Length: 169
Image (cartoon, one colour):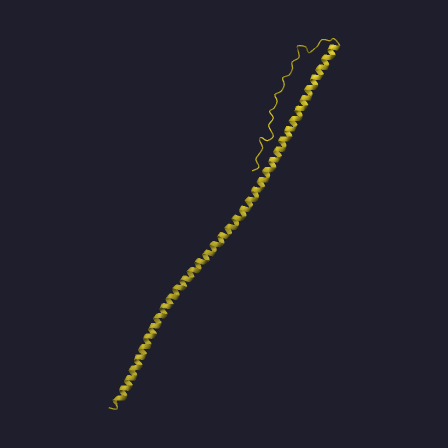
């Protein structure tokens, strides 16, 4: 029996090596399957990362566009404020010029009214002087009965200074 024992030991050792190889093969397959799963997960993660990066770049472009729009609108608002201020200043200036013209016209009308009153008074004085001279010379009065007094002109209604003013607001 001695010769069969080494064969049995050798067969057992060979069988043990075969089992070890089978176990290593299963471990290698399991690890390869895990590696394949990890690679698929990594590929999916990479794809998500790329999609996220594309979305992030798109967001940056949108933000840059909105920022540009905001800056443009801010500049337009500033220009509109300046224009509004200029319009307001022009309006005030025109108002003051208009008021000055009104006061000038009123002053001119008052001066003309005073001149007319002075001329009427002078005419009355001259008529009185003529009448007195005619009486002193016993001359007939050439104006008796023929003279018609001119109707007085209607007075122009004075507009109070406060009316008709333009409101600065």
